[in-house]
Structure formats: structure tokens, C-alpha cells
Amino acid sequence: MAWSQVYDPFNNMWLSTFIASLPVLVMLGGLGIFHMKAHKAALLGLVVALVAAVAAFGMPAAMAGKTALYGAAYGLLPIGWIVLNIIFLYNLTEQRGQFKILQESITGITNDRRLQLLLIAFCFGAFFEGAAGFGTPVAVTGAMLIGLGFTPLAASGLSLIANTAPVAYGALGTPVIALAAVTGLPLLDLSAMIGRQLPFFSIIVPFWLIIAFAGWRGAMQIWPAILVAGVSFAVPQFLVSNFHGPWLVDVIAAIVSLVSVTLFLKVWHPAQIWTSTTGSGAEALTAAAGAAVVNAGAPARGGHSYTAAEVRRAWTPWVILSVLVFLWGVPEVKLFLDNLSVFKFPIDGLHQMIVRVPPVVTKPHPENAVYVLNWLSATGSGIFIASIIAGLAMGCSVKELVQTYGRTLWMIRYSLITISAMLALGFTTRYSGLDTTLGLAFANTGFLYPFFGTLLGWLGVALTGSDTASNVLFGSLQKVSSEQLGLPPTLMAAANSSGGVMGKMIDAQSIVVAAVATKWHGHEGTILRYVFWHSIALACLIGVLIMLQAYVWPFTAMVIGR
Image 1: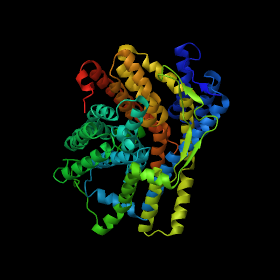
Image 2: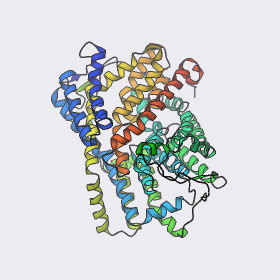
Image 3: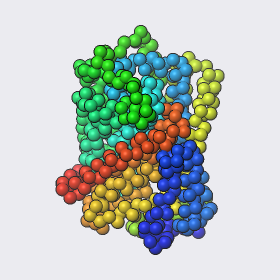
Image 4: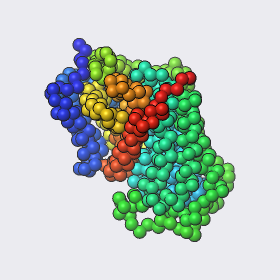
């Protein structure tokens, strides 16, 4: 029999909200306060979620168990599959000596660590977000930064901070497409509205990133380059989202930004070169005081003894990766690969057996629960093929490829367990209605709803690990609540996605990916503490912008006819 979700089982919204928040509080508290291993904190949070779902919210135990298994499977594919293959590629390039050449070739553009961070974490990461999403940018940029000599905390935390502004248009616009599907609002209107919110933060985030790394003074020393990176990303982001659609926003903006910064650095360089790979903010956190930070006499660009052919060979694996990840993100390619082979498994006893009910939706709506084993079209499969091609191009034997893959799998075994446990937790809170109970608490804020509705999107991504999932979870609630309050539904639906991008840096899935990419397993709590307040502060700033759009600049929230 079907089971309808219950959002206030105690007839006391405060108590119901507190019980619904326990799984997240336990997991984050275990990570951030009690310094538990990530997989243990995730498993403990999962246990609490199952107990709350069954004992408090009345979810049938069999359904709760199947939901957890469904989430765990999703954690392995697509998420774990991406991480495994990115680390495999990185290990191949490192053991073949190609990453060292790549590292030194980057110094040929700039020796300044702040500018290297800007190019890799913000510009290059945005391309991977636009092409693939789902943890790919953090995995790639984290691995590259750690290879360049950045400390694990700096590489992981700063990759997470950088991977924010592009998230709403990630994976070729998937979050916006999903938002349009669940709300019934026009896709191009939602794309345009988000494109009037995020460009401000596409300028703010690069400054925020460098300030987090090098402090205010260190950032101001390179403000022209930061401004070039932000503006050259924000302008295409606005234009493409408003006059084309959500599909290529990040890809075009990232390429324009990357080229703009690279060309700018040919004619400009800072007076002082930052040589520390720790950064002032990370330094304070890790007590690595005394590291060399600024070298006034260092050259703006480094030299190396490698030939142009050797540099091209070193970059070849990452070019192959970029091309294949982009191709795997194209809908027509995905459809072609799925037509070759895809397996869909409706979860018996769960698929369309859980019903979402008003006020979250306008009428009762059964939830789908179909595990899609798209083993060919999954982004991780494109990364795997890119890794094999790159490995063979570097001269690896089949035996070396197999041995390296096995070593990589063993290296990240606990991280794969962690990702599965965290996705199991996220699916349990979603299907049991715990997430929705938290969302309703945000929705009942009256005049302040534009602010707290934005934080609802932030909460959704922090809980689910995905802007797409947050839009599916809360998009309809945003539309219903905004119509009841007389606010433009397109504005608040877009705010859900825009606010959600700042939750990406603290969701457990992303933190685990960052820890794996930087070979810092077991320090997920440290990463969480480092990025947590950055996430909240930036989400609140977006909330303030949405408040201004709703009440002070309502013309910016108008839907322009096409």
C-alpha cells in the first residue's frame, strides 16, 4: 500500500522540526565537533535518520530500508564512480612524471600561487561544473592543486569555495531543467531569473576565494586579475542565461574567463609574488606559521627545461578528460549511449508508493524510485575512458593500468563507503519527509520569506548534495509559498537554485570528494569547519539580494516576454 508523507507528526511544528533535524545535526556534529571519521559519522547519521523516519514520522520500516539501499547505490554510481576515475587519472599522470611537467608549465603562466588558484579552482573548475557537475570539478581541481604543492586544507577547502557560482547551471543546465519540470514554470524564464542573481556572486566569489587564501591585503595586490576573472565570467553568464538558455552558460563563461585571465597575465603581473601554498587563512587553521608568503624578488613567471612537445604531452591527459567530459554531458550523446545500453530498476515496494502531499505540492504526487544503471552514459564512464586513453598515450602497459586502478580503489575504499552512507542518509530524509518538514519551517516566515526561502535552497543542497535534487525537493514548495504570499513564483523558484549553490561547499558528499581528491581522508571535519562560515555568509548575501529583488527592485524580478 502507498504511504503518504507526514510533515508534523507531533502536531507541534517546533518539535517535528527538531526531530527532523537530528540526522543532520548528528552527522555534522560528529564530523565538525567530535572529530569522528567521516564514514562513522555518516553511518551514525543514517541510523538516526532511519529511527526518526520509522518511529517518529511513521514511514514503514521496509520502505525506509529500501530507501537507504537506493541512496547507497546512487552514492556508488554516479558519484563514487566519478571520484574513483578522477583519482585514477591523477595517479597515472603522477607516477609517469607528467604531473610534475604540468605543474612547472603552469608556473610559465604565473609563479603567483593566488593566480594559479584563480585559474585552476575558479576558471578551470567552472568548466568542469558546466560540463559534468556532480562532484567532478572539486575532484579535478582538488587533485591539481594538491599536485601543485598546495596543502590539503587549502586545496580541498578552496576548491569547495570556488565551486559555487557556476553550480546552478552545472551539468549543461540540469538543475534549471529539473526546476522547470517540477514547478511548471517556463524554463527560459527561470534561466533568465537565475542569470540576474548569480552574476553578482560570480564577481564576489573570486575575491572571496583569494581573501580566504591570502587575506585582504594579499587579495588587493592582485585585484585587477581577480576582477578580470569575475567580470569575464559574470557577463557571459548573464547574457547566455537571459538570451539563450541554461545549457551552455557555464561552459561558455568558463572558457571566456580562462582565456581572459591568461591573456591578461601576459601583460600584467603583481608587484609581489605570493609563494606560499598554505595561504594566510589556512595557515592560521593549521598553525603552519612562518611559511614564506611574499617574495618581492621572485619572477612573475617561472622557467623550466621542458620542450614544448613535453609540455603538450603533460597537458594531453587533461585535454582528453575535458573533451570527453564535455561530450558525455551533451544530451544527444547521453541518449545515444543509453540507447546502446542502460538498465532501469524500479525499486519494488518504493517506486510510486510514497506520496508527497499538500502544502508541499498542489495535489498528492507519488514519488518515483527508479535506480538507473547508465553504465555507459555516466560521467564517470567518460572519465574512465579518458583515463585509459591518456594512460596508453603516456606509454602505460595494460598491466600497469590494472595495477594502478586496483591501488586507487584500495586507496579510496573508506571514502566510497562514506559517500554511499551519506547518500543513503540523504535519500532517507528525502523520502521520509524529514527534509520537507525542515523546508516548511523556512516557508512559514512571512515578510522575510525571500531571505529564508533562499536559505531553504541552501539547506536543500547541504542535505542532498545537489542543486538538482534541492530543486526537485523544494521547487514546488517555493512556488506554492510565493503565490500564497503574493511574491513572483519565478523569483522564489530561481532563489532556491541560486541559494543552493552556496550549500554545495558544505554538503557531505562534496567534502568527502574533496578529501579523497587531496588524499586527506579522515580530515573531513577539518574541511567542514573551514568552509562552514563561508557558506553561511555567502548564502545570507544571496538572501539579501533576493529580498531587494522582491521589495526594493521588483522590476528585476519581472518576467520579460520572449
